[in-house]
Image 1 (cartoon, rainbow, N blue to C red):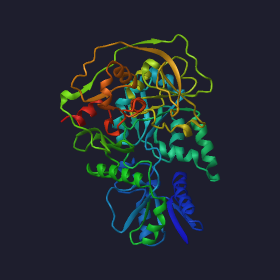
Image 2 (tube, rainbow, N blue to C red):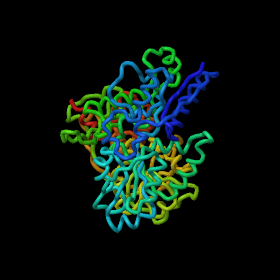
Image 3 (cartoon, one colour):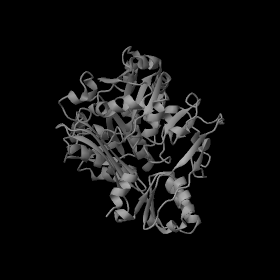
Image 4 (tube, rainbow, N blue to C red):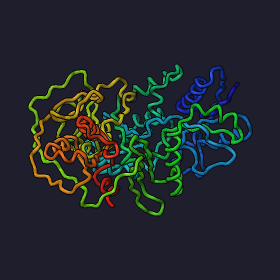
Length: 502
């Protein structure tokens, strides 16, 4: 069988078409593929910001005609480029596994002192979504003490936009979709070696940060690839089934439906991210609607119904502790990436030797205000969240977690433990009488509490995503008290109270 696959002619679009073609050939040995590449309307008009171009589907509609006329068998699109309106004569029948859906900030290293002196940052991006969501974030989470952030329109493919940044005397930074850069840098085909060498030479001149979805949720379906065919081609539906990723498809569809509920279109100042996790589905919605309504939602839909209790049966509290910094911290020279759970764990001298990743945006902000460049964070979802920065780093990363002497460290952890301070828990007098469900802010807090009152072992326990649940589970299993129906994960303490209170 011979297939014709169409796509745009940019490096990234060709690469994405090859990804689909290679997956099909792996699933169907002997399949022959012919590729057809051409420019779309969006490729030809490089003057106007996309949201100002009146036509819909500026990167996709030209290929719709090819399908209708029978000139091609299938078209590979970036899901985010497809209009939210659903067609009836064509269908999206396959979605490839999603790449990183986050945005990436690139800043010229040569402009750092200029930015600090002016307390102002100028960024290339034509996205109203990014401008609305990121302007306040940059002022507090970049190590420049910014008072002003401005955005300027830019068009072109990824190498062109980065070149425009490096050639500009006035603009300091650029925002791109991380998936695009990751794919180009990791493409295996020989024809991409030249663009890869160019991009690597550009990245040597830039500092970067992966922007958190809880602040800047992605454009709907960003990072996902869609395969479009004629709706009547049942033979192709069957052929494409083995390469279809249902989880990515469901997340993309939900994001697009949310965006469509506010009108859809790239003019919207709205980002939406749907993340599937073992404990549930996380939805982040942020932006400003056309009628001026502020959107700010972060919701976790649990896989299992949470228990319900009267308010009086819920317990949460802060652990009182003394932290003493170590005067000498030894860091193995082979370590080149550092996970920082809280700002107090930071130790001087690390920033110059490796990449800095924080547990959440609070720690990111604290470090940035001390002049430290942070490359991204786990968004308070736990250190098991893969940073996915090896491609950008251009080398394998060996991670360490900066924490206290007893910071959780087990055989399953991806991190070595570097102790930067000691922690002494101060004895309190917790009142657990009548409490049935407990929320723990850390594994240390839980372990200290069960020493004070072992009767709580048989109660319900809750925590945020991450290592705290591992600590609790390991202790319960060791003491033959683990019941999967009594250990629950929530976004945070507020989410726990909201979902567990009768």
